[in-house]
Length: 205
Image (cartoon, rainbow, N blue to C red; front, top):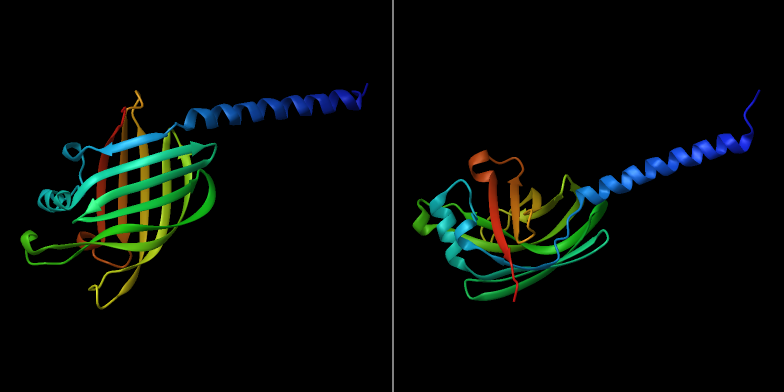
């Protein structure tokens, strides 16, 4: 005897409902609330994970580094503010954590090769970064690319850059670690890749 059509439809609807619930539960488990004001902990941060001398030199240039994050559903806004060598900067970055593409103007750090770390010239330059962002296992992961200058300030040489940012919140939600990989395509690994690991503490004032 054939099952009535409504029983078949009911089974399909119930299966779809269970699947949707599982997807929702997984999404909730993946996402964290990054909202708040985050102050850089210089002692626990590394602007350059591969060279301690360069890391120390970069830290000298920064003051009052902070992130202010607001989060509403899949939209995450990050206000990045700091003073670098006496110049105040502020960038507002909007990310969509559902794999929608996004585009933001922000700064990236680079260095001009020098014989030794004492003569190393560190610069901040602006770039138009196109990226996609998604939550994965409790981490916010952003991957993007941009055209950036690798020449002297008065003689630009544009090259493609890849950037990856991973935001990870501690279990007690009081510490935010941001790991940043920056790669210049078609460049030797020793000068074309750099990794930063910045640690921020939540401002409770």
